[in-house]
Image 1 (tube, rainbow, N blue to C red):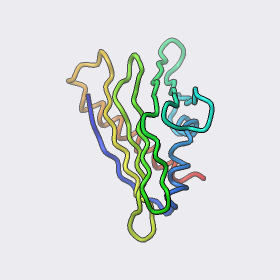
Image 2 (cartoon, rainbow, N blue to C red; image 1 turned 90 degrees about the vertical axis):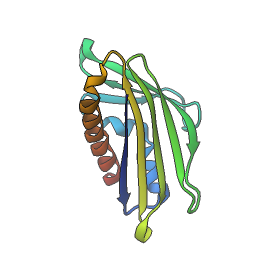
Image 3 (cartoon, one colour; image 1 turned 60 degrees about the vertical axis):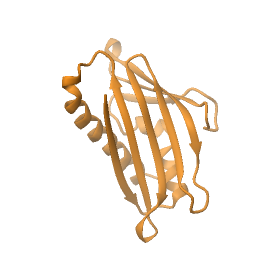
Image 4 (cartoon, rainbow, N blue to C red; image 1 turned 180 degrees about the horizontal axis):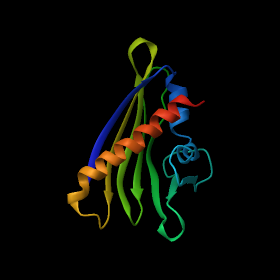
Length: 146
């Protein structure tokens, strides 16, 4: 099991940063060999299920997630979304928080606990580094693209 925190600031409103980070199919556009689908009809809220399918052919796996906290930002109040990972291979959780930042910017916090079943703990440092790289690029790209 690995945990990590990513922090970013963006020249966006809280609402716009939230919109960009919580449009789930956009996540798949930033990660190679991954497609993200919302399984529950819109709008997103608590109880929404999202699945990220990664890999090729028989080497693909699903990262099934449920939105368990959905508090969009209102005015200057922060927004928080928690996804609990319910897959057979990938478990844990992720939290996406947007809050007012310095100079009118938005501060983004991405916290994650990630477990890959059957992966020995000796690989935790490699998993942490890979996850920080992949999710860091994802957050950067999502915040950059309208």
